[in-house]
Image (cartoon, rainbow, N blue to C red; front, side, top):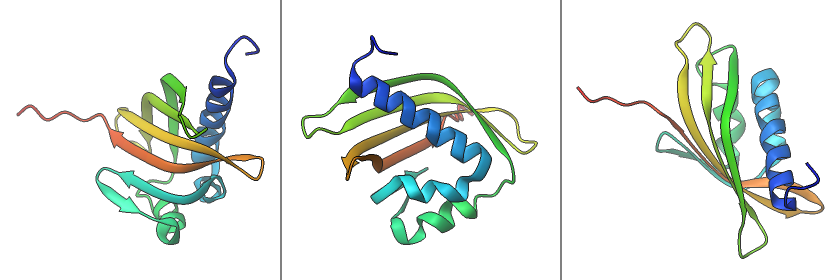
Length: 125
């Protein structure tokens, strides 16, 4: 990991931590967000409803598998992270997903300021 640029190290560590929390205790996810706008399937949520958004998702268990992740530094010293993977919720079929984060260092901690999520569903019918 030492050969990777610092933004890739930070982004990869964040992604690993994020999905580990999401899969084991998603109610703890609020601690990694600050002043956020979350977009999930075109629904936007701010901090006030963020906790309820994660707590009230319509499944009891979930497992994420990350296929690929990319990280880039931004001109304002943030990190843009893009994740592609698959998820399995309860007894539902495995579904692909895409998720993007903007990470910012605030008080020596990297937190998420923006989050966009979309299931990779296609309806060609």
